[in-house]
Amino acid sequence: MNLVVANESHFKYAPIVCATIEDSAKVRGTGIAKRTPEYIQKKMENGNAVIALDGDVFAGFCYIEVWGHEKFVANSGLIVHPDFRGQGLAKKIKQRVFELSREKFPNAKIFGITTGLAVMKINYELGYKPVTFSELTDDPEFWKGCQTCKNFDILTRTERKLCLCTGMLHDPNAKAAPSKKEGKLNGKAFKRLKSIKETLFFKKKKHGS
Image 1 (cartoon, helix red, strand yellow):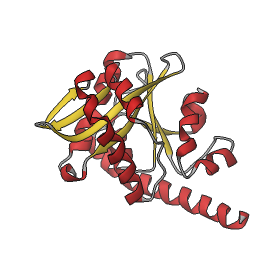
Image 2 (cartoon, one colour):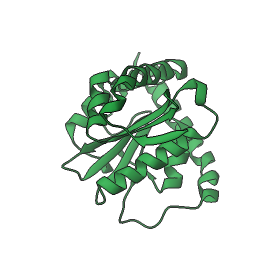
Image 3 (cartoon, rainbow, N blue to C red):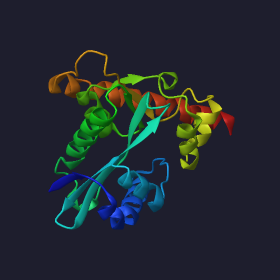
């Protein structure tokens, strides 16, 4: 398996990247901010993406988004093709794109929003902390990207304070990342947090209907 910083030579993989992200969201029944092949290609062109290839076969992908005049960056669109899941590839991709973010934007805070427990655990081991949305970028263009998510009504209903996604932030000026043991122990806490948020919003939706 080869993990590389994507460039123009990888443009041909943009359609399958988009299709894999969308298909995965449908299977999980979760919201997703849709991206076009042109958008993915722009990330490749700028050197802001990591792609995993098994020979010439697409295996996984993740890209960097820059917000607030480089004060914040997000590692987004993490995806592993179904044929390569269960091999720890997502964690390797996430690690590499995190390193790339630190190399290119050493002073930026790195953040992400996700509903996935597995991604939360990986983020935690990299040094991310769960935070409120108010601690993330206030760049309207970032939040505009949530409009294609099926849960966007929750985000707007709470005035962009809460959603089913959990916000996580890595501050380069904060203390070092926790040990793997600490990350595993917090798996239960993340699962409980996700359950509480889902129950809360489903109740609100039921009462509001």
